[in-house]
Image (cartoon, rainbow over all chains, first blue to last red; front, top):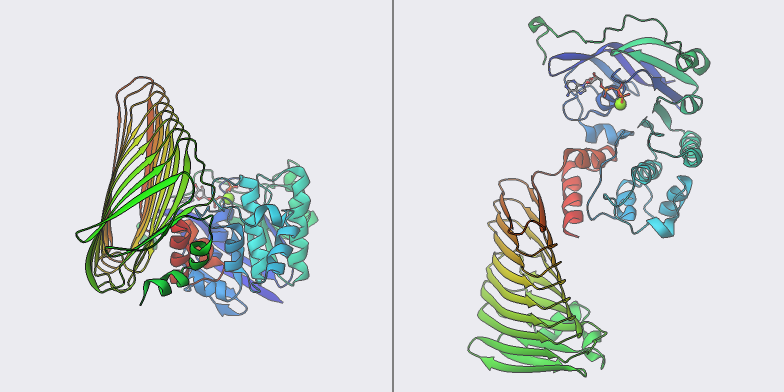
Length: 248
Length: 306
Ligand SMILES: Nc1ncnc2c1ncn2[C@@H]1O[C@H](COP(=O)(O)OP(=O)(O)OP(=O)(O)O)[C@@H](O)[C@H]1O
Ligand SMILES: [Mg+2]
């Protein structure tokens, strides 16, 4: 069953076409991957699905569980079960790890906070009272972000480069989190540059220059990583949108 | 409401019963209760509209449990003036937790005039927490002149996040001697027509003196805040930092004027100021977890002021 569908989605930022005629279907309970070179539009796609500020003037349609969410704000989308883990997570001065996770948690018990921290490989006793600020490393911050998502128990999560800044040993914790999400029935969208992360997915999309180049089972997209970028009409300089399109 | 009820609400009655914990409770111009421990000498004198307090911590005395001060007015209208002299002698250490409570304020002025001297190697940690009425009706004027001797350590935290600010005008000046350290942190949350002024100055006059001025202010509705933080370094290897963060919501107005002045080529002072609405990424992160915009803003402000 489809949970999320993009239908002919176009998005321009500062007069530049970033997403072009993207049509994609994501299936309930599956793990998907989105791959493509730097600047392909992967993070933009995630921001557009989440409805972040500046990413809402979309042409085309986004459907979630059959309902159009194209004109909805972040809050409404989150309430429907969509969430996003940023490529570079935000830092919060003065907020403890515990308060931060509790704010997102569906079940706000201590046991739940302990559970999600353990899944991402952080010792709850050591981390619970630390601040989610610049005293945490980038990798620790990403794990806490993931822990808060586990506690939220979303229907669909977009994980933007969940492995960036994560050491080899900790990668297993990230994979464990993905398995836990999947077991919960959460639909996962992994944005990645890593073959190991791609290997976690069942279905993958290759995008380039804001356009969908190919999609299919993970194995079909894998050669992209083996230095065989599938030939595409990649224009390094995205075209400047003409006035006649009327959206800026 | 009686002072005793207030103290109970703050869970302070236990501290006030402990023979090892020193305390001083002043209601308007009356010393309601006091208790001292060895090495801590305190004289109090009732003056017009207030109390003059002289605190002396004898050389080498280390007071292990924080001393509790409580200044309050339980009436609706009053002027309260506290004149405070503090002398922490060589090598002595003291921490003070000060509660300033004006829960029924309609027209109250609270003035604090303090002069504080720390001798060589002395340490003074002072936390002041204000609890005001929900409707403002109060003006608070904390004034302090502080002198730090060699290797002395002075740390303060001023917190006014419960009840309405009314009007507050803080003016602190610290002169830091050789190898001394000074850390001042102010946290204030304003709403309605609250009027916040913070003036903090640090003079790093001794070699290797260190000073940090930190302020965290939130202004909502029509509140205004002006933060003037100044650090002047005149000695070699003096190090200073000014860090001001103000969140503005609704029709609030915030100003930050950090001034850093370096008068010695081997001194170094830095500053950072962030003023504006809450950070978009923080806001969107919380909203993406299902919080409403209002809940998310409140959450971020709570964190900033925590
Ligand atoms: N606000 C903006 N205005 C104009 N161009 C933008 C804006 N934001 C992003 N872009 C451009 O959109 C393109 C896609 O960016 P995006 O961040 O989505 O790429 P990505 O696929 O996530 O890349 P990476 O792998 O490096 O994370 C890039 O060319 C980028 O420069
Ligand atoms: Mg990206």
